[in-house]
Length: 403
Image 1 (tube, rainbow, N blue to C red):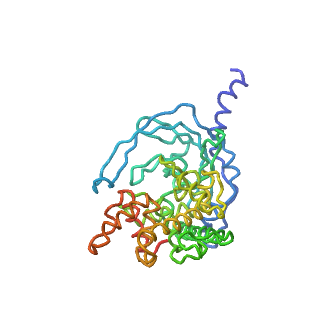
Image 2: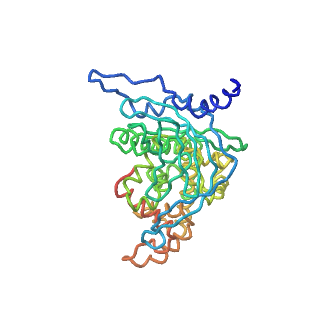
Image 3: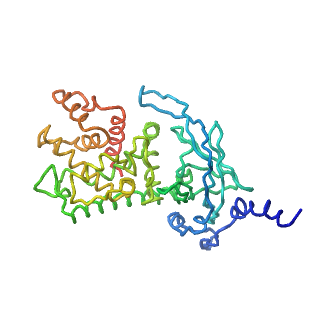
């Protein structure tokens, strides 16, 4: 066989799906006198990832249908399982693997294989990587898919370079830390939980600071700035990401683990967490703003200077929290008109505003109106099932003083 043809057929494909697969980082942690490698999880996640970013990721041309289970408790209160149809294109993905014993990192390239039974990972020689099914039934979750490395041992996927289409329809890699069961181990878990809580609080503080600088006036209390309305506690907004990103089924199964999962993803990804996430109702970002509501906030509070580009604005954590503060202020103003000014002293005010944020405020007004003269009845009786789930999660967070 002609040597050039041999190289083209065998050697070049190995480079794309082989040689790159076994490259190993030259960065190792120091070794203590006891022989144990010392390294920090947050340092590993914050390392520069030029090698991972250079993996030639791609998206196939053919859309392929597959099925996954979805588990729910919402409609009946009992566990129900639905077989749902999805579709995606096969992809080439870069992965950063961590040896959890030594701190060594490796960059490999994998591809997805899609059949009617779902998506699986095709790994290079010497590796076997499985997709983990979440308690709600989700397996394939794009850049936030949970993986388990079964070969070699003691390794975990801590970052992936995931191909996605940008606004110009060009394929670009997106570096993201997917949730891993390794993060449930005590040492990485403690570090990531703290990082998630600290980041969440910092974003909310920055949002309040910007609204203060811009002197944005309140609709609820026109003689005050929004940030000076005592009823709008920063804690309300620190909890929003846990309410929006905590899956309801998983919250029912294990509220603590679901809350921790959200904080771990936030601590690992910081400003990139849920940056491109949009649901079927077009709600986008870490706290799931809809285009219509966001546009209304821009119109109602022009001095806040919220940017016009919706998806970028919803993906920006500080900006979206600013919009959420304004929405709470606007909803509070309408609530005061209907229920009186003393509503600001109601210990359930956060519930009313959270329910208004999740659904239409009129459902809150109607529900309050139907129970105002009945002290033995929960005020939430007229809320929609999704909003009832929102309140279920909120009460858990309040009860446990989270985050």
